[in-house]
Length: 591
Image (cartoon, rainbow, N blue to C red; front, side):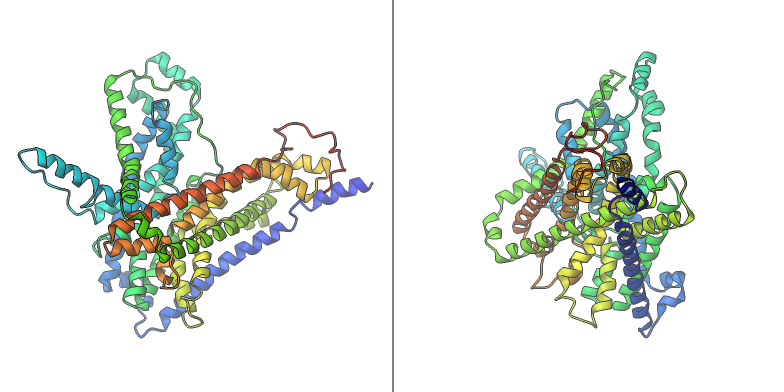
């Protein structure tokens, strides 16, 4: 009877982590509260000015202030061009990487597509300048060829401007699209490829009837996501925009606060950015296809057992070889040029500078703290989502409302950039305390908001599946909390937890958002130090700092992978693994 009561109590309480749903709901309420406080602070700041243009209407604001209208127009143009170019380049590259999966060098290119996720934006900008800048590799090659030829060859013009920003966005977004589309191409059933081989399909027919139907559902969600990233871009536009000719709302917010001290303009730009973010949020939440923009689980890319290339055309092989060369130039050449320039530059002077080590300590402290906080919050929110769906047959109206409340709260922090939250915090706290003294905590808070949505999306789907699979085992064996965590959850979710830890740490290491508002002589990070060196035309020091920043970022990402391997090393009692040990009998498992 006692054992029956234990099982009944276990089932009524929803299994282990019985306090986590309330904790998760409290976290979501806190997220909504932070957003509400930020919005209220911006509205109150807007009403304190002598010229409250905020209440003239959005259309009147745009036509009355040319700077705001130009910033919005410039952001829309560059985001549209960046999105279209990224998609048009990524689709054929995905097809080539799928049908040439076994070619020499393809594993290295697949690794590079994953490495683009963790490379800081400041490092990528420095790498692109090392290739396409006036002192870059291309111009050096042109100069060397001109010295041999009897006639000179025109050098590349200035790299700064719209073309630099679009190319930088392609550098980051094309690998993202490839990593989403490639598994879908490789997951096509083998029978389709066998049928295509039997019917003698050409490469065009193969794309029309097999490849395009497998990826077309993801094109629109990826375009929305890439457009949002490009529209809210800050560091790339700040470093490569070349001045006010190419700008975004976030760059204008930074200029209004740190350069012009025009808080009125900063408030209007921030509210306009929030309005655009709200529109994007409604698009992403309202349509079911849009919710597929972020993968719900992490799946490995497995090579096809059937060689999927149908056409033996030589011209197609040449075309694919050219495409692979373009991908190598896009991804590998900037990183390689940056490494060579950084190693050959004055690396010793950078390593012996006290400012570098202080910035390194600040960056590492914030990155590791952000990773720990985001990982814990993502796990709690994933468990909350699972508990809300514990009744899998039919969800009550309250459960549906809680799930919608949770999802929208997490998604809101995804579409509102960190620079917008930083502006709200700056305006809210500038009369209460010295914002530059508490700058580390503000940067940490902004990094948590930045990393939480992506981490939650990556872990929630697989977490729910894993918890549903071990539900009956928990009931049958009366497993305690620590045993459940050690033998059921961590062996299955350890690698995913380590991945989001390393990903958030890498993102925080390279962030140049909020630190641009709160940096001072007493508090700097490595991305801000790199930006200052590049702005002062200290190219050798900037290259060395970029190489060191990239190395540290990759190391913290690898640290997350090692942590994930360690967490998943415990013997698993999940249904897919070996049977339970004889010592673990029903109702007898207690720590």
